[in-house]
Amino acid sequence: MSELTHEGLARGGRNPLQQRLAAAPRAVNDRLGVIGTALIVALIAELVVFSLLSPYFLAVDNFNNIGRAMTIVGIAAIGQTVVIIAGGFDLSVGSVMAAAGMLAAYIVGAGGGTAVGLLAALAMGICVGLLNGTVTSYLRINPLITTLATLAIVRGIAFVISGGNAEVVSNTLFLDIGTNSVAGVPLVVWLMLVLFLAVGFVLPRTRFGRYAYAIGSNARGARLAGVPLHRWRLAFYGLSGLLAAVAGCVTVARTGQADPAANIGVELDVITAVILGGTSLNGGRGRLFGTFLGLSVLAVLNNGLILASVASYWQQVVKGVVLLLAVSLSELRGTRRDEE
Amino acid sequence: MSATPLLQLHGITKRFGQTDVLRGVDLTISPREAVGLIGDNGAGKSTLVKILSGVYAPTGGTIELAGAPVRFPSPLAARSAGIEMIYQDLAVCDDLDAAANVFLGREPRHRVGPARWLDRRRMRADAARIFERLGASIAVDQEVGSMSGGERQLVAVARALEFSPQLLLMDEPTAALSNAKIHMLLGIVQRLKQEDVAVLLISHRFTDLIQVCDRILALRDGRIAASISPRGRDVAELMAEMQEALTGETLGASA
Image 1 (cartoon, one colour):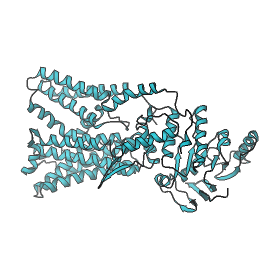
Image 2 (tube, chains in turn brown, blue; image 1 turned 90 degrees about the horizontal axis):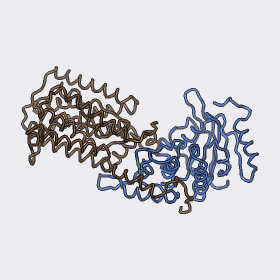
Image 3 (cartoon, helix red, strand yellow; image 1 turned 45 degrees about the vertical axis):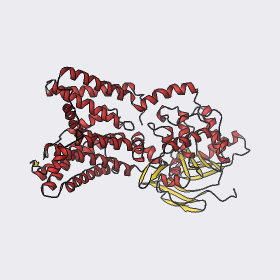
Image 4 (cartoon, chains in turn green, red; image 1 turned 60 degrees about the vertical axis):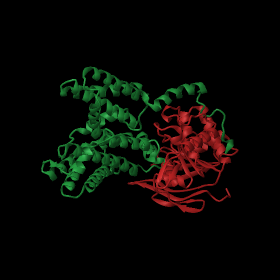
């Protein structure tokens, strides 16, 4: 088929130099991006300011505290990043955490064994995720509405089953997960890091990841190219549910009890981290490393404000301001394209 | 057209609710043939090509590909059978790069045991090869969203040609292009014929069709109302004939 050349087709009036110039900033962008750079600068600024403000800030123990504080939001943010890249949204993660944690605690408390309890909790998370995916994809219900509904349903079930009472966990194996350390770093922090690395490795290298971007970018185009949308959306929401359940088990392991009121409102922290990390709410764009940076900026900020004795009410204000700044920055930078 | 037909449609009908959009379309396309399809808005052109590309299932009638009856329950099924479609809006993903768009839906993968992962190097190399073949200087790692209209069109063409289709369906491919780009695209269509690819081209630009098509079919009221052979004919006369075929006596009565 070598004759298929046609002189000048789509040279588009761009000479090689112009193309190289256009490509250069993109290459930098691909690695870190304006948002990633800004987040790293913000993170360094936080470290400098807080180490000046508090003598306790720059300590190994304190960094373990920060890491531990990141785990629950962080693990859920991994799944949320994938769902938002794919053009979806998952508000149900906080409720799934509570319900899955309760299920694990009940099974362990009834002598079912830690492994069985954890697996049952994870299976429950996947089921809620599949429900979210089914309703949003097959029935074409807006994911905000779908997951707002499952947020209420799953949280409600957790309260109904428990009668509103927390279940105290006494199984030491389960509790060890929340308290043990490996190489000086809390086990739950390792878990979060491994999950970030695993999903971060999978996203650019598999159909799972590529189709998340493709479906979030142009679902109709992806479908016409032969991508089965429903099946993949189920996978994305299923992952989010699974990871929310993991975060729920981590919550129980750390606090020693399963509370039906645990992690209320945590979905907003999760989404804040994801959006702060540069993932587009319109879908199609985002990086897991950005989510990790966004998460770190927020966690260090929270920790530093506490150590600097800033009233906790201000933390909410600061978090909101940071999010607004980050989103404004990304809008300024972003070439506004015509949305469909 | 004495060769074994590549594609044959017999009595294809399509009904949406109470509306009969297609009322029995019979159509034959031979290998290497470029066929034009004209019709007023609502005549059923898009519905017809969507049936061929696996987006819609026909209500009735049969499709034969190289003599064997086929059904396309999904776009992927049609693509696997060698029928590619270039949509009017191109259906590309702006946030993916050119190579990812070319291979979307059919990415080559490495396999080790149960593990599968994308063969990104091969996608980039193969995409670069097809762009070179098309005479296009497109960077395979450039995001499609940052490309010009002509470049985006070429990405869509590359996606359609990468898997060596037997039949290429094009829905108003020149609608969004400048005159220079239209000329180049029609050049590609002409060259495809030499490469054993049949083309079904929907366009409202009669001049484009006259230039590249062996036959021009007029779809009216859900049926093929006329078949016009443009070869060796006077352009003005053809234009008049096509206009007449489109409107007929039933002007304004089409669904």
